Image 1 (cartoon, rainbow, N blue to C red):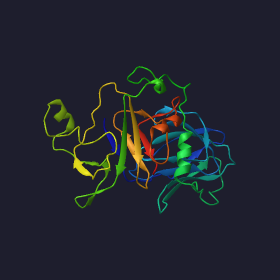
Image 2: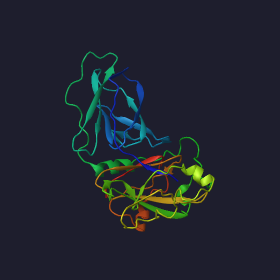
Image 3: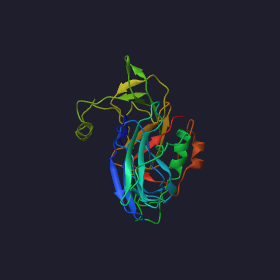
Image 4: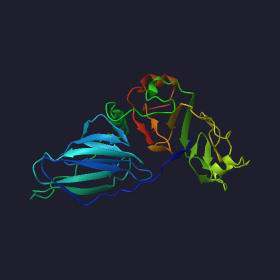
Length: 289
């Protein structure tokens, strides 16, 4: 099981798009940056969200959408406004300096340039973004059932094998600022992990250095590997104790994001889990505590 934290960001947008009044167009929006969330919006137009990272969702309408690091969404936009040009806007979220990129949605029969102020992003921050994320629900009437290792898509009825709580931090280790998980900052070994595992090469990695719960100990360096068993069904809690948005990616797998919350996680939080129609995703944002 390999989790990756994603850092930094790039903002690019095509200069002009055009379309015919009354037609509906599909937009695919991806945040290919490394650290910064973005907000996407189109002046005067509602956006119908239809897909998030390969999962078809309940088709709600939005004025703007937060897209976090490593995530992709698909929207449908109907050109139902008076024929003219409209701003397409993407801007950074949760940053002291807001970077904004604009393009133009051009109606085919438009004779009027863009006008008015560039639409602003939502004034509220992390809480607003979390509430929006909670509205993303799996469309259970679309496509076929998605199998998991137990052979059922009813993930909410399966008892987890274990619970792993991963808390990120940014400690100083040997005078250098590093990222760490449960007090361990990962270092790349000279021997690839899969080769070391396949040939049973000792001393390359450790399955004991990274605990399944935050330890509170001083941060250390290690080539840490967390051991699981085939067909385990694992509850993973991401605990963000920093003051910035974090993104976690599970390499080669998808997972159900069943809840978002504030503060420290406790078992009582399970009462608020969505065990019916949560999305399967490859990357999830984790709000600051």
